[in-house]
Length: 285
Image 1 (cartoon, one colour):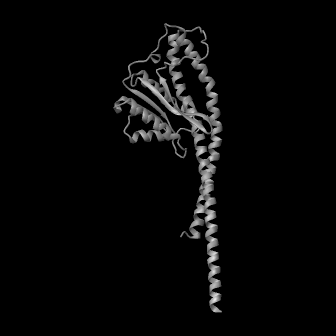
Image 2 (cartoon, one colour):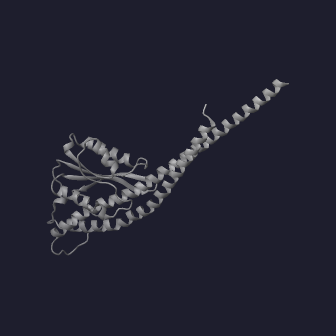
């Protein structure tokens, strides 16, 4: 039978755990507000640069660029955005499960794909399986700026331009709301799905459309990666907030259960003592 001291010790340790998870929930909620705002404010920029790129690329049939043309696929790049820490529910596992599934379906050899890992959880996952990690970055701040991933984004685009891989897919959690984050697969390169939903705008080019695209297309691809990172960070904070809230609620339920068990055990001990006293007094009569 569990002693009263053991039950009381479990109640005390669970209360301390509950205080920690509650604090982590509040911290994540605070970070989420800023991360969500960062992701939303980046959307107008992405919409405008997509409109400009689409107008230039599709506005003239004579304009071509290697980043706009599909080529035979000999090797595929997978850019995977995860977190550096756990305690975020299924945030990381859902992404890694999907990427692993896609790799198993598409490739029979590790030489047919390369991983670009943003986040320690994804890097460690693929490193433990012997995958080829072409690029990696960890320890990003909770509110990353473009300069934090500028080098990686530039190198990721350059690897495609240099023919290291022939297509690049990106996987991340898309932020829908504080309680919903959708695992998303997005083809970054080549830019074959660049058509804007808005009406194309006619521009006058100086010096030429080809030279403008030479500069603008890599910037657009890099912006896609940065926008996905902002989206993923908002999802990460939301997932961690939800996970810590669930942990806090579970701790509260456990405390209530242990308190009830403690009171019953204490009542039983008191009843036993009274019975022994009464029995001893009756024996003396």
